[in-house]
Length: 315
Ligand code: CP
Ligand code: NVA
Image (cartoon, rainbow, N blue to C red; front, top):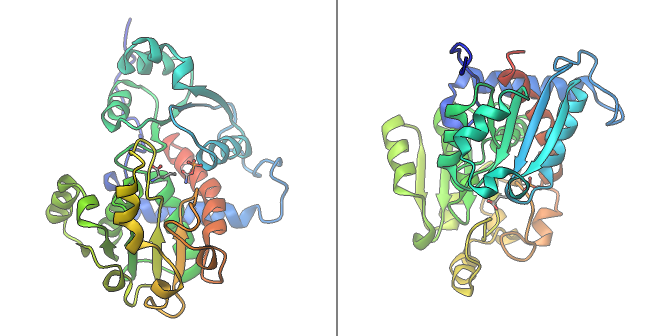
């Protein structure tokens, strides 16, 4: 006997794969779980422990602080356990294929979370796994982050549908997941990036094919005008070449007090972290009253729980 009988596996690979109802349910579940354990020490499990006896394998081929810790603590608080792996320790590094890795790992654990820059490899893992696969960041998207960002927006500003959000900086993986979210949840997104670092044609095509109010431009002032949320991210993402040219191109896209003053008066500032203070954001903004970045980081924990429960068929 080789493969187990075919069944639908609930992967969490991209925000684009979900409809508004499912995304709203995930946001609501994250918020509910956050409220339910307010004030509890982190080592205390949630009262229902829905993932009792379940094991999550986490494979990190790249660095992580938030994703790694929040998934680990989320599993513990839901009653499950984790196994932490790095790509370099696995036979993957000695040319075992991702498909074979998927087949094997599915026989040991209940779900896999992976951070690997090569998006196609993550899709290949999912295609060959018989357990859920969660995208913990690829070069093309960062869906777990943006689910937490949506939780954060709604917690501070109410329902996101119909609202105006702005992005200033590189058109990277996090932006792509924001674009997916804008289209699926029906909010407006204004993007400002240097033309040399603008969104991939495939992402623009996806927006065209799926509708939605996403505009790609190169003027940060124009992008933030009236926005209720301004977002920035690293100028140099994992896997990018760090060059003076890149920094020079992105200088005009820094989120500073002057740029924030063009957004709505009560706009919030978000950043997935890690931040490079003095580059994509100034201290005065990230440490200022409009910044919600620490709530955003905390919400990774609550959002991971919603994702894990959904993947494992518990919601
Ligand atoms: N925002 C985020 O994904 O952080 P880590 O790289 O620390 O996981
Ligand atoms: N865009 C950043 C996000 C880090 C969490 C990167 O890919 O490095």
